[in-house]
Each structure stands twice: as C-alpha cells, then as structure tokens.
Length: 223
Image (cartoon, rainbow, N blue to C red; front, side, top):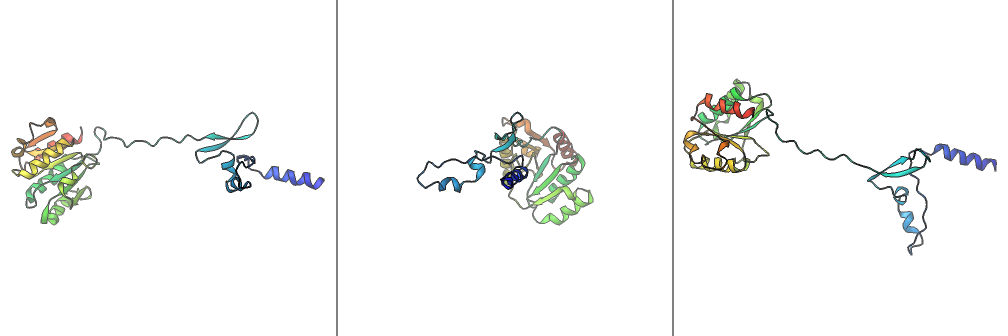
C-alpha cells in the first residue's frame, strides 16, 4: 500500500490552505441525491458570496466567516469655500446681461468654480470670445437646456439673473429660492422675491453692474 500513502500525501500537499472544505451531505430529497451534486462545493459548505474563508488559529481548520463590506460613503455636501456651481439665466436678446455675468464670474469666482449659461440665444459666439479673452473659457459652459429644468440644488448652488424687469425671470427666481438655491437678482426684480421666507438667499444688485455682480459672486463663493 506504499503507492496509496504516497498518492494521499501528494493530495495533501497540493491542497490550497485557504480553500473551503465542503463535507458531503446526504440528500434528503426524492431526487436520488442529484440536488446536492448540482450545488457547488462552497455552497454545500455554507460558503455564500457574503462569506469568506478563514483558518482557525487553534485547530487549523478552514471555516466560513461572515464578510463585512465597508459602507458606501455618502456624497459629501458642498463644504464652505468649496467649488461653487453658478447658473446664469437671462433673456435671449440680452447680450449685455450675459456679458456682465461672464465678467463678474471672472472677477469674483475662485479656483474650482464653474459657470453655466442658459437662454443666451444667438449671441453664443460673441459670449464665447468674451470668456476666452478673460481666460475662463475652460470653466464656462453654454447649455441649451431650459432654465426651469436647471433650478435644482444637485446641479447648481447659485443662480445669477442677468436680465431685469421680466416677469418670467421673477417666477424663476421665486422657484429657485423655494428649492434652496441662492440667487443674485437685479434690484428691479428683487421686489417680487424679498418677502419670501428664504429671502436671506437673495442678493440684490444693480442691473448690469459688473462690480456689484462680482462682489455677490465672491461672497457666495466663499460661504
């Protein structure tokens, strides 16, 4: 029986120390034991995708132990002084208003901030030249989205309303405030939103005043 002992020794040496030990079980069903054969050895040993194999330090036996996956980290909220996402909204024919937004962002924004423009109409090329001349073309986005669909806290932090005396913009400003966004509005539109419960989120500026807009941008950028 020397050959049998040698064969058994080779099997013992070839077994991986971290392999799961799956003792055979007698089938209790009426299928003649085929149900156990259809299962894999780890499944019969109680090793599931939620368990791992560990070796007992005392006995040396390999046992199945629970696997504790680390929790998925939650998406962090914007920290004070973190990157700020600005959205500039205006009327399609108001090139001056969008130019004011780009210049104010170039003056008051900080590293990591981004500006998205919607509603600019046919003036995209001229506005792109302004952004390039001011060195912010890489962080200024021209979007064809509908302004009302962009007023979401998970998309933007601050909304700049660059056109004054338009009822539709006053409605958008009210919607933005109700959704928890900060808004920068021309004084002519501020009256329709200043009496809201969250009117502290309203920053009033003079229409087309680049310095006033840039000061509001800088203030909100570091909050």
